[in-house]
Image (cartoon, rainbow, N blue to C red; front, top):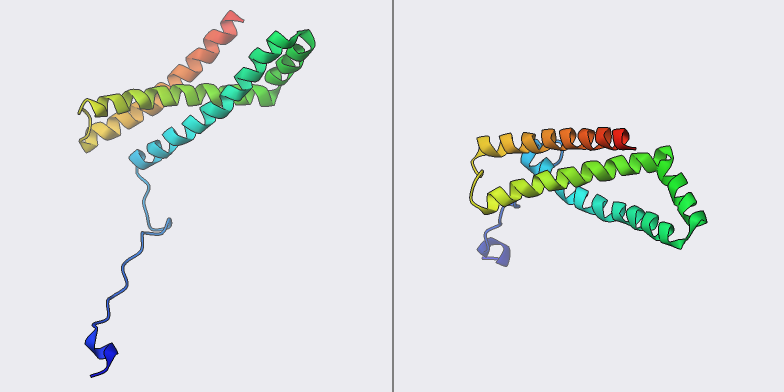
Length: 135
């Protein structure tokens, strides 16, 4: 008997499903968004820090920061930062509920996931409307 006959051949283990086969679920998408908004908040905070430092540095630096933030790119970045902030807040509240042991069943998980998305949209739009009215 040869060595290859003595050891039974194992079937190759299945690989993870490819992205074309895997059907995304709301829970996985929201988890990815939660991580992404955490990164976006960190980057957006640099913009906020630049604005505050420019205000302390003098009128010329502040005017440059105000010009950039008032441009279409700056406003788009602020809008994204605001949406990221509210998404991260709503998803964080959802995670607190999970930490308390509530919301693990699938119907509740789906409802709270959609509530996070709706809450993010409503809070972001409200913040921008209030901001425009106040300014």
